[in-house]
Length: 208
Image (cartoon, rainbow, N blue to C red; front, side, top):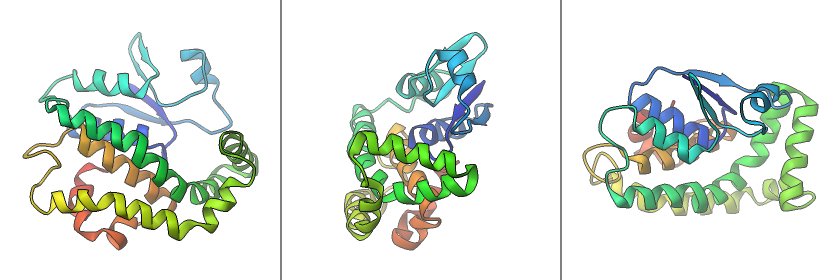
């Protein structure tokens, strides 16, 4: 199997966590931001993540997660609440965490892949959210950090009482929440250790 991804993507991070927890061998392919020809050949589109498993190609992260879950071992979707928490992480938590992380992701894009990649990254975000939005998010960094930590507070409280969010085994809820933190840590290395240290042991088991 091959997983084509942007390494900072929380949706790709969730899939890498599933692969880790299920001990599934998979080649991780980092797609250059400006070079998406292979994605187009495989799917007809330019979006990641994409999973290639022999002749099977899947380009939707939710479908990829279900496909990987079915590869073997205990399901990560056994508790209905796991799906609810996954959706909360992928949609609501992601919206706040992304605004915190985005200015740092833009800067890292420039350092790692050059000014053209950085400019395209900014253009895509500004088309969706408005001109100058990344600069505004940077200005409001303290606000987004506070909101991110506020949303994490119930996670922190839960994990003081148990090893995993929904009991004795990891579920898709754990993978989804941890993946958002992986995105934030691309912008702010050691964010978890510095701001939510009680999550460090849990996060270390999930990050990949």
